[in-house]
Length: 280
Image (cartoon, rainbow, N blue to C red; front, side):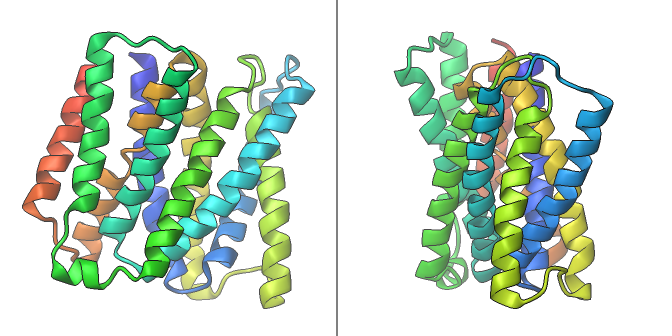
């Protein structure tokens, strides 16, 4: 139950962070937005590590965190760029479907045995994400250039590797893997930003959204790694990938993007999936 709630909270936070990051990327380059958001997240997580040390952390935890930071940082850049160039209501679910399915397939293939009701809940969650991602009117499809689709797919693969890497970290490693991940991603993205744009800060119009994205994304990652330590990777990956529900609702509320009837059904199906998984 606790892992399910943590994964659901992770999805909610990622949904908010992705929405804010997408808005910031409409005002400045996705690379610069991600670099600034990760820098803020690194500072917050490092502060948390100072307050709550993890003496049980090992070198392996640092290494796996670094792998997660590399793939996750590049995935966020791809996602924010896709959100800026395409329809949020299509990009976010497409990325989520991939990032949910690949880790779940890996976990089950590695020998994890799930209770029947959990398996049904996971299947419903995947269907819900796919239903939402496949919905859309002619306007939505026309506003989805191939570049946005490819970036969304790349982001999904990157997030999948990140989840799997985090799952290898030890239960006693605390925030060490997250700090390691942010150190790698901040260094990489910061260097890329400086080389590409000869500057680091985002433009004033994007700062507030980048700030929100950085703070909420850091919170989401803490919830995510906690859920991975107490629950199966398959369950956590699928439930935490339902963040498009939040992103779509925010896009509907603030951007006027229309929510299709099929998408409404997908949202309802996602809620049923959470309840079924929580009952396992």
